[in-house]
Length: 430
Image (cartoon, rainbow, N blue to C red; front, side):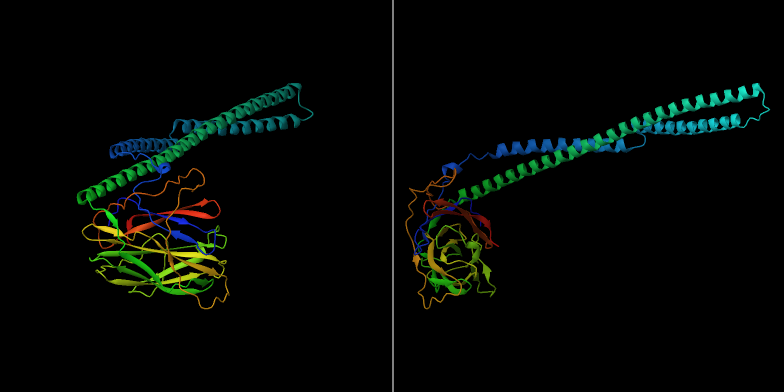
Protein backbone atom coordinates (compact mmCIF):
# COMPACT_ATOMS: atom_id res chain seq x y z
CA UNK A 1 0.00 0.00 0.00
CA UNK A 2 1.62 3.26 -1.11
CA UNK A 3 0.38 6.40 0.60
CA UNK A 4 2.08 9.37 -1.01
CA UNK A 5 0.60 12.26 0.90
CA UNK A 6 0.43 13.08 4.61
CA UNK A 7 -2.64 12.36 6.73
CA UNK A 8 -2.35 14.62 9.78
CA UNK A 9 -4.32 14.73 13.03
CA UNK A 10 -4.07 17.60 15.50
CA UNK A 11 -4.50 16.87 19.21
CA UNK A 12 -5.09 19.78 21.58
CA UNK A 13 -4.41 19.21 25.27
CA UNK A 14 -6.31 20.80 28.14
CA UNK A 15 -4.45 19.58 31.22
CA UNK A 16 -4.96 22.48 33.61
CA UNK A 17 -7.32 20.30 35.68
CA UNK A 18 -6.85 16.62 36.58
CA UNK A 19 -10.33 15.75 35.35
CA UNK A 20 -9.48 16.17 31.68
CA UNK A 21 -6.07 15.15 30.35
CA UNK A 22 -6.47 15.56 26.61
CA UNK A 23 -9.36 16.44 24.32
CA UNK A 24 -9.16 15.45 20.71
CA UNK A 25 -10.42 16.49 17.31
CA UNK A 26 -8.92 15.76 13.89
CA UNK A 27 -7.84 17.91 11.03
CA UNK A 28 -7.03 16.12 7.81
CA UNK A 29 -4.10 18.04 6.42
CA UNK A 30 -2.67 18.52 2.98
CA UNK A 31 -0.49 21.47 3.96
CA UNK A 32 2.61 21.86 6.08
CA UNK A 33 3.07 24.80 8.45
CA UNK A 34 4.67 27.76 6.72
CA UNK A 35 7.86 27.46 8.77
CA UNK A 36 8.37 23.90 7.50
CA UNK A 37 7.61 24.53 3.80
CA UNK A 38 10.51 24.37 1.41
CA UNK A 39 10.92 23.95 -2.33
CA UNK A 40 11.84 20.37 -3.16
CA UNK A 41 14.50 19.90 -5.84
CA UNK A 42 13.36 18.47 -9.16
CA UNK A 43 14.44 15.06 -10.40
CA UNK A 44 16.57 16.77 -13.05
CA UNK A 45 18.35 18.78 -10.36
CA UNK A 46 18.86 15.65 -8.26
CA UNK A 47 20.23 13.78 -11.29
CA UNK A 48 22.67 16.62 -11.91
CA UNK A 49 23.73 16.59 -8.26
CA UNK A 50 24.15 12.80 -8.30
CA UNK A 51 26.26 12.97 -11.47
CA UNK A 52 28.45 15.69 -9.97
CA UNK A 53 28.87 13.70 -6.76
CA UNK A 54 29.88 10.67 -8.81
CA UNK A 55 32.56 12.67 -10.62
CA UNK A 56 33.95 14.00 -7.33
CA UNK A 57 34.01 10.49 -5.88
CA UNK A 58 35.81 9.07 -8.92
CA UNK A 59 38.38 11.86 -8.76
CA UNK A 60 38.89 11.26 -5.05
CA UNK A 61 39.29 7.53 -5.64
CA UNK A 62 41.86 8.17 -8.36
CA UNK A 63 43.76 10.51 -6.04
CA UNK A 64 43.70 7.84 -3.34
CA UNK A 65 45.10 5.24 -5.76
CA UNK A 66 47.87 7.65 -6.74
CA UNK A 67 48.68 8.31 -3.10
CA UNK A 68 48.77 4.58 -2.37
CA UNK A 69 51.21 4.04 -5.24
CA UNK A 70 53.38 6.84 -3.84
CA UNK A 71 53.45 5.11 -0.44
CA UNK A 72 54.53 1.85 -2.04
CA UNK A 73 57.26 3.69 -3.98
CA UNK A 74 58.45 5.46 -0.84
CA UNK A 75 58.63 2.14 1.02
CA UNK A 76 60.77 0.55 -1.70
CA UNK A 77 64.51 0.08 -1.13
CA UNK A 78 65.11 1.31 -4.69
CA UNK A 79 63.57 4.73 -4.07
CA UNK A 80 66.20 7.45 -4.74
CA UNK A 81 66.14 8.71 -1.16
CA UNK A 82 66.29 5.13 0.13
CA UNK A 83 69.37 4.46 -2.06
CA UNK A 84 70.98 7.71 -0.89
CA UNK A 85 70.28 6.87 2.74
CA UNK A 86 71.74 3.39 2.25
CA UNK A 87 74.94 4.77 0.74
CA UNK A 88 75.24 7.29 3.57
CA UNK A 89 74.84 4.57 6.17
CA UNK A 90 77.50 2.46 4.43
CA UNK A 91 79.86 5.43 4.35
CA UNK A 92 79.28 6.01 8.03
CA UNK A 93 80.11 2.39 8.77
CA UNK A 94 83.37 2.65 6.75
CA UNK A 95 84.27 5.88 8.54
CA UNK A 96 83.68 4.24 11.90
CA UNK A 97 85.91 1.32 10.92
CA UNK A 98 88.64 3.70 9.73
CA UNK A 99 88.45 5.62 12.96
CA UNK A 100 88.81 2.42 14.98
CA UNK A 101 91.84 1.38 12.97
CA UNK A 102 93.43 4.84 13.30
CA UNK A 103 92.90 4.80 17.07
CA UNK A 104 94.61 1.42 17.26
CA UNK A 105 97.62 2.78 15.32
CA UNK A 106 97.92 5.57 17.89
CA UNK A 107 97.91 2.99 20.67
CA UNK A 108 100.57 0.95 18.88
CA UNK A 109 102.77 3.98 18.14
CA UNK A 110 102.55 5.16 21.73
CA UNK A 111 103.54 1.70 22.93
CA UNK A 112 106.65 1.85 20.72
CA UNK A 113 107.64 5.23 22.16
CA UNK A 114 107.07 4.06 25.70
CA UNK A 115 108.90 0.79 25.05
CA UNK A 116 112.16 2.28 23.73
CA UNK A 117 115.14 0.98 25.72
CA UNK A 118 117.57 3.31 27.42
CA UNK A 119 120.12 2.39 24.81
CA UNK A 120 117.91 3.74 21.97
CA UNK A 121 119.63 6.31 19.81
CA UNK A 122 118.34 9.80 19.22
CA UNK A 123 117.46 8.82 15.69
CA UNK A 124 115.33 5.90 16.94
CA UNK A 125 113.59 8.10 19.51
CA UNK A 126 112.84 10.76 16.87
CA UNK A 127 111.44 8.19 14.48
CA UNK A 128 109.14 6.72 17.15
CA UNK A 129 107.88 10.18 18.15
CA UNK A 130 107.26 11.05 14.49
CA UNK A 131 105.28 7.81 13.97
CA UNK A 132 103.15 8.61 17.03
CA UNK A 133 102.45 12.14 15.84
CA UNK A 134 101.52 10.85 12.40
CA UNK A 135 99.17 8.24 13.91
CA UNK A 136 97.51 10.85 16.15
CA UNK A 137 96.96 13.18 13.17
CA UNK A 138 95.47 10.32 11.17
CA UNK A 139 93.18 9.42 14.08
CA UNK A 140 92.01 13.03 14.34
CA UNK A 141 91.23 13.12 10.62
CA UNK A 142 89.44 9.77 10.86
CA UNK A 143 87.38 11.08 13.75
CA UNK A 144 86.28 14.14 11.74
CA UNK A 145 85.49 11.92 8.75
CA UNK A 146 83.37 9.71 10.96
CA UNK A 147 81.52 12.72 12.39
CA UNK A 148 80.81 14.02 8.88
CA UNK A 149 79.68 10.59 7.67
CA UNK A 150 77.36 10.13 10.66
CA UNK A 151 75.83 13.56 10.03
CA UNK A 152 75.25 12.77 6.35
CA UNK A 153 73.72 9.39 7.26
CA UNK A 154 71.41 11.03 9.80
CA UNK A 155 70.40 13.71 7.31
CA UNK A 156 69.73 11.16 4.59
CA UNK A 157 67.76 8.99 7.02
CA UNK A 158 65.64 11.93 8.13
CA UNK A 159 64.97 12.90 4.52
CA UNK A 160 63.81 9.34 3.80
CA UNK A 161 61.63 9.23 6.92
CA UNK A 162 60.06 12.61 6.11
CA UNK A 163 59.41 11.46 2.55
CA UNK A 164 57.66 8.31 3.75
CA UNK A 165 55.66 10.16 6.44
CA UNK A 166 54.52 12.71 3.87
CA UNK A 167 53.45 9.92 1.54
CA UNK A 168 51.45 8.24 4.33
CA UNK A 169 49.91 11.55 5.36
CA UNK A 170 48.89 12.25 1.79
CA UNK A 171 47.34 8.78 1.55
CA UNK A 172 45.39 9.30 4.78
CA UNK A 173 44.03 12.61 3.54
CA UNK A 174 43.10 11.02 0.22
CA UNK A 175 41.32 8.16 2.01
CA UNK A 176 39.32 10.62 4.11
CA UNK A 177 38.42 12.62 1.02
CA UNK A 178 37.28 9.43 -0.72
CA UNK A 179 35.19 8.47 2.29
CA UNK A 180 33.50 11.87 2.38
CA UNK A 181 32.95 11.86 -1.40
CA UNK A 182 31.41 8.38 -1.20
CA UNK A 183 29.06 9.49 1.56
CA UNK A 184 27.99 12.48 -0.54
CA UNK A 185 27.53 10.26 -3.59
CA UNK A 186 25.43 7.76 -1.65
CA UNK A 187 23.29 10.56 -0.19
CA UNK A 188 22.77 12.05 -3.66
CA UNK A 189 21.90 8.63 -5.13
CA UNK A 190 19.48 7.94 -2.27
CA UNK A 191 17.78 11.31 -2.67
CA UNK A 192 17.41 10.72 -6.41
CA UNK A 193 16.06 7.20 -5.93
CA UNK A 194 13.57 8.41 -3.33
CA UNK A 195 12.40 11.24 -5.58
CA UNK A 196 11.92 8.84 -8.49
CA UNK A 197 10.01 6.43 -6.27
CA UNK A 198 7.75 9.20 -5.02
CA UNK A 199 7.24 10.41 -8.58
CA UNK A 200 6.29 6.90 -9.67
CA UNK A 201 3.85 6.60 -6.80
CA UNK A 202 2.37 9.98 -7.62
CA UNK A 203 1.94 8.76 -11.18
CA UNK A 204 0.02 5.72 -9.97
CA UNK A 205 -2.18 7.87 -7.81
CA UNK A 206 -2.74 10.33 -10.64
CA UNK A 207 -4.09 7.57 -12.86
CA UNK A 208 -6.55 6.35 -10.28
CA UNK A 209 -7.46 9.78 -8.95
CA UNK A 210 -8.70 8.35 -5.67
CA UNK A 211 -8.68 10.34 -2.41
CA UNK A 212 -8.94 9.04 1.11
CA UNK A 213 -12.06 10.37 2.80
CA UNK A 214 -13.31 10.65 6.37
CA UNK A 215 -15.55 7.71 7.21
CA UNK A 216 -17.60 8.33 10.38
CA UNK A 217 -19.24 4.93 10.03
CA UNK A 218 -15.90 3.24 10.74
CA UNK A 219 -15.93 3.43 14.54
CA UNK A 220 -13.48 2.41 17.25
CA UNK A 221 -14.84 1.95 20.76
CA UNK A 222 -13.00 1.02 23.95
CA UNK A 223 -14.89 -1.31 26.29
CA UNK A 224 -13.88 -2.18 29.83
CA UNK A 225 -11.03 0.31 30.43
CA UNK A 226 -11.38 1.48 34.06
CA UNK A 227 -11.51 5.22 34.68
CA UNK A 228 -8.91 4.72 37.43
CA UNK A 229 -5.87 2.46 37.12
CA UNK A 230 -3.48 1.85 40.00
CA UNK A 231 0.25 2.08 39.31
CA UNK A 232 1.87 -1.35 39.41
CA UNK A 233 -1.20 -3.12 37.98
CA UNK A 234 -2.48 -4.31 34.61
CA UNK A 235 -6.04 -3.97 33.32
CA UNK A 236 -7.56 -5.71 30.33
CA UNK A 237 -10.12 -4.24 27.97
CA UNK A 238 -11.35 -4.50 24.39
CA UNK A 239 -11.06 -2.30 21.32
CA UNK A 240 -14.08 -2.87 19.06
CA UNK A 241 -13.78 -1.81 15.43
CA UNK A 242 -17.12 -1.62 13.60
CA UNK A 243 -17.85 -1.16 9.91
CA UNK A 244 -21.17 0.64 10.03
CA UNK A 245 -21.17 1.35 6.32
CA UNK A 246 -23.06 -0.56 3.62
CA UNK A 247 -19.94 -1.91 1.92
CA UNK A 248 -17.11 -4.28 2.76
CA UNK A 249 -13.78 -2.74 3.74
CA UNK A 250 -10.97 -4.91 2.36
CA UNK A 251 -8.39 -3.92 4.96
CA UNK A 252 -9.08 -2.18 8.26
CA UNK A 253 -6.17 -1.07 10.39
CA UNK A 254 -6.92 -0.18 14.03
CA UNK A 255 -4.63 2.23 15.82
CA UNK A 256 -4.13 2.97 19.51
CA UNK A 257 -1.93 5.42 21.37
CA UNK A 258 -1.44 6.15 25.07
CA UNK A 259 -0.21 9.34 26.72
CA UNK A 260 0.15 10.19 30.41
CA UNK A 261 1.46 12.91 32.71
CA UNK A 262 1.78 13.46 36.43
CA UNK A 263 -0.89 15.47 38.25
CA UNK A 264 0.63 18.78 37.18
CA UNK A 265 0.13 17.87 33.55
CA UNK A 266 3.59 19.19 32.76
CA UNK A 267 5.73 16.07 33.22
CA UNK A 268 5.44 13.32 30.62
CA UNK A 269 5.44 9.77 32.08
CA UNK A 270 4.78 7.88 28.84
CA UNK A 271 7.74 5.58 29.47
CA UNK A 272 6.00 4.24 32.58
CA UNK A 273 2.69 3.48 30.85
CA UNK A 274 2.47 0.55 28.43
CA UNK A 275 -0.42 -0.18 26.09
CA UNK A 276 -0.45 -3.76 24.77
CA UNK A 277 -2.55 -5.83 22.39
CA UNK A 278 -2.83 -9.40 21.15
CA UNK A 279 -4.27 -10.79 17.97
CA UNK A 280 -6.85 -13.52 17.53
CA UNK A 281 -4.16 -15.83 16.15
CA UNK A 282 -1.66 -15.31 18.96
CA UNK A 283 -1.88 -14.90 22.73
CA UNK A 284 1.43 -13.05 22.85
CA UNK A 285 1.09 -9.48 24.09
CA UNK A 286 2.64 -6.86 21.85
CA UNK A 287 3.41 -3.35 23.03
CA UNK A 288 1.88 -0.46 21.10
CA UNK A 289 4.78 1.74 20.03
CA UNK A 290 2.66 4.79 19.13
CA UNK A 291 4.04 4.62 15.58
CA UNK A 292 2.37 1.66 13.90
CA UNK A 293 -1.04 0.18 13.36
CA UNK A 294 -1.99 -3.09 14.94
CA UNK A 295 -2.71 -6.20 12.85
CA UNK A 296 -4.88 -5.69 9.79
CA UNK A 297 -8.51 -6.81 9.99
CA UNK A 298 -9.11 -8.21 6.52
CA UNK A 299 -11.81 -7.98 5.38
CA UNK A 300 -14.46 -6.30 7.56
CA UNK A 301 -17.89 -6.75 6.02
CA UNK A 302 -20.66 -4.16 6.09
CA UNK A 303 -22.25 -4.03 9.55
CA UNK A 304 -19.63 -6.35 11.05
CA UNK A 305 -17.25 -5.68 13.92
CA UNK A 306 -14.01 -7.13 15.21
CA UNK A 307 -12.57 -7.03 18.73
CA UNK A 308 -8.92 -6.53 19.60
CA UNK A 309 -7.76 -7.65 23.04
CA UNK A 310 -5.98 -4.80 24.84
CA UNK A 311 -4.09 -4.44 28.10
CA UNK A 312 -2.83 -1.36 29.95
CA UNK A 313 0.16 -1.87 32.27
CA UNK A 314 1.46 0.92 34.50
CA UNK A 315 4.81 0.67 36.26
CA UNK A 316 4.72 0.71 40.04
CA UNK A 317 7.11 3.68 39.98
CA UNK A 318 4.62 5.83 38.08
CA UNK A 319 3.42 8.86 40.08
CA UNK A 320 -0.24 9.69 40.49
CA UNK A 321 -1.45 11.43 37.37
CA UNK A 322 -3.72 11.31 34.38
CA UNK A 323 -3.73 9.36 31.15
CA UNK A 324 -5.61 9.01 27.92
CA UNK A 325 -5.86 6.20 25.39
CA UNK A 326 -6.54 7.32 21.84
CA UNK A 327 -8.06 4.95 19.30
CA UNK A 328 -8.89 5.23 15.61
CA UNK A 329 -9.12 3.14 12.47
CA UNK A 330 -8.40 3.44 8.76
CA UNK A 331 -9.47 1.31 5.80
CA UNK A 332 -7.97 0.55 2.41
CA UNK A 333 -9.72 -1.22 -0.43
CA UNK A 334 -8.20 -3.22 -3.25
CA UNK A 335 -9.58 -0.72 -5.78
CA UNK A 336 -7.53 2.09 -4.24
CA UNK A 337 -10.27 3.79 -2.22
CA UNK A 338 -9.47 4.53 1.38
CA UNK A 339 -10.58 6.48 4.40
CA UNK A 340 -10.59 6.55 8.13
CA UNK A 341 -12.14 7.60 11.39
CA UNK A 342 -12.69 11.38 11.27
CA UNK A 343 -11.86 11.59 14.99
CA UNK A 344 -9.40 10.14 17.44
CA UNK A 345 -11.43 8.90 20.38
CA UNK A 346 -9.74 9.76 23.67
CA UNK A 347 -10.58 7.62 26.73
CA UNK A 348 -9.34 9.41 29.84
CA UNK A 349 -8.27 7.63 33.03
CA UNK A 350 -6.75 8.58 36.36
CA UNK A 351 -3.48 7.00 37.48
CA UNK A 352 -3.63 6.23 41.20
CA UNK A 353 -0.42 5.83 43.18
CA UNK A 354 0.84 2.28 43.75
CA UNK A 355 -0.96 0.56 46.61
CA UNK A 356 -4.10 2.69 46.28
CA UNK A 357 -7.53 1.07 46.78
CA UNK A 358 -9.91 2.98 44.49
CA UNK A 359 -12.69 0.41 44.92
CA UNK A 360 -15.28 -0.02 42.18
CA UNK A 361 -14.81 2.53 39.40
CA UNK A 362 -16.72 3.30 36.22
CA UNK A 363 -15.35 2.62 32.77
CA UNK A 364 -13.42 5.38 31.01
CA UNK A 365 -15.59 7.50 28.73
CA UNK A 366 -14.63 8.95 25.37
CA UNK A 367 -14.33 12.68 24.92
CA UNK A 368 -13.97 14.93 21.90
CA UNK A 369 -13.44 18.68 21.87
CA UNK A 370 -12.96 21.09 18.98
CA UNK A 371 -9.37 22.41 19.19
CA UNK A 372 -8.76 26.06 19.76
CA UNK A 373 -5.36 26.83 18.25
CA UNK A 374 -5.71 30.60 18.00
CA UNK A 375 -3.81 31.23 21.23
CA UNK A 376 -1.05 28.66 20.69
CA UNK A 377 2.44 30.03 21.41
CA UNK A 378 4.98 27.41 20.39
CA UNK A 379 8.53 27.45 21.73
CA UNK A 380 11.42 28.62 19.57
CA UNK A 381 10.83 29.20 15.88
CA UNK A 382 8.30 26.38 15.37
CA UNK A 383 5.14 27.35 13.52
CA UNK A 384 1.74 27.08 15.19
CA UNK A 385 -0.12 26.98 11.86
CA UNK A 386 -3.32 24.95 12.41
CA UNK A 387 -3.52 21.67 10.47
CA UNK A 388 -6.10 21.99 7.70
CA UNK A 389 -6.95 20.51 4.32
CA UNK A 390 -8.27 17.23 2.95
CA UNK A 391 -7.56 13.58 3.55
CA UNK A 392 -4.50 12.45 1.65
CA UNK A 393 -4.50 10.74 -1.74
CA UNK A 394 -3.29 7.14 -1.99
CA UNK A 395 -2.62 4.45 -4.55
CA UNK A 396 -3.39 0.75 -4.78
CA UNK A 397 -2.24 -1.66 -2.10
CA UNK A 398 -0.97 -5.11 -1.34
CA UNK A 399 -2.26 -7.26 1.50
CA UNK A 400 0.93 -6.89 3.51
CA UNK A 401 1.14 -3.08 3.58
CA UNK A 402 0.25 -0.44 6.14
CA UNK A 403 0.53 3.17 7.15
CA UNK A 404 2.82 4.11 10.03
CA UNK A 405 1.72 6.73 12.53
CA UNK A 406 4.61 9.00 13.44
CA UNK A 407 4.54 11.00 16.63
CA UNK A 408 4.97 14.76 16.40
CA UNK A 409 6.70 16.91 18.96
CA UNK A 410 4.84 18.39 21.92
CA UNK A 411 5.04 22.16 22.34
CA UNK A 412 4.61 23.84 25.70
CA UNK A 413 1.59 26.16 25.64
CA UNK A 414 1.16 28.50 28.60
CA UNK A 415 -0.07 26.99 31.86
CA UNK A 416 0.24 23.34 30.99
CA UNK A 417 -1.60 23.08 27.65
CA UNK A 418 0.03 20.81 25.09
CA UNK A 419 -0.33 20.82 21.32
CA UNK A 420 0.55 17.51 19.70
CA UNK A 421 0.72 16.95 15.97
CA UNK A 422 0.76 13.41 14.69
CA UNK A 423 1.29 12.35 11.10
CA UNK A 424 0.45 9.06 9.46
CA UNK A 425 3.02 8.27 6.82
CA UNK A 426 3.59 5.50 4.28
CA UNK A 427 5.43 2.44 5.52
CA UNK A 428 5.52 -1.32 5.03
CA UNK A 429 3.18 -3.31 7.28
CA UNK A 430 5.26 -5.57 9.48
